Length: 430
Image 1 (cartoon, helix red, strand yellow):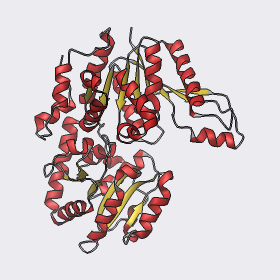
Image 2: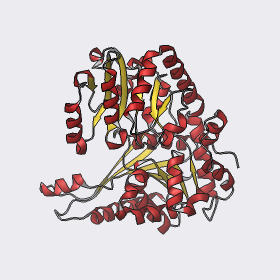
Image 3: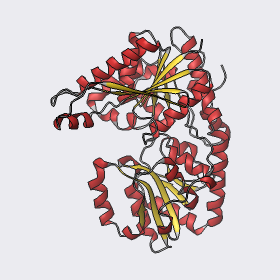
Image 4: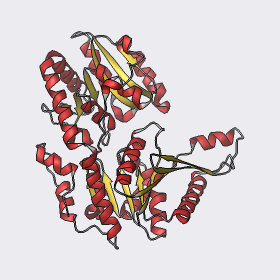
């Protein structure tokens, strides 16, 4: 009988966001491996529910069920009963809905994405039912939320009680192992993958007529961790060097709108900035063929899908020495790396690529070759196949057979040769 697995995630397409895109990709990879895959989608932050209550719009809890490409998707919504309801009321409601799903479908394994919003509920439910739970740390969960004293105990408990924990970069894995040393023998780091994209079949972007000169672009839901203010400073310095357009594909998150409006108003290059606003993934990808340099000046960022998309498009990339960006990009080989928080280094790297078009072309081609060879879905699928098999087939949920290989990943010294990158991308065979 095929094993039933339930993935839990804060977002899932058509929701916009990197966690949702990754959850969908991994769900499809698991389906290809023969698992019966369900996805439970819910948020652990309840701003919208509180707004509904204040407006007098109360409701019962409910679950919307649909099917996407053979994956059963359950979108869970907590009840809105009171203007003074607290987070624990909503979470308890969601936990009851998750329990009902388990009673109905009898899953064999739970797998949570983004440990803060989904990991605790998922792991608690799994433990209460004697089932293994895998937790996948994506980025902000350990880069930001770990500094909230109210969340630290919950994060530690979730990590401690996971059958296995995965990370999208060695930086994230290192931090988690320092925070909870006992996970060292049951954790691993490997990169996201990306499906090939036919860029020549994408529609013509709506704002293409506004692009002038060298097009420097970045993609994302722009917020604190993206380092965009440093890119603004670097581009200001470029004004004396060349004509250019700074293309921001996406928009600034609502909670930081005031800050970014202030930054843009202070900038001397406002007339050279094009912001698309929130658009779907297809529309965003359609801009990449028209980009000359892709900048990803993140302060921390897990393993951003935007990086892999730009590599697949063959773009010259300027990235930062942080998380998987600094692991995947090899300086002067398939991109240029700078230190985060450094406008000066960003400026120097952008200037270098603008002055040396041949280098820009060579770096873009090398980036494309690397993503096709080492970050394709078959590599990621083998990683998940090994982890799922080991977790499901080991009664104690202690993954000791590949512990030594896992330590090899942890102890990597940061060298960027091809063989090491293959090792990070693919767990060795048992």
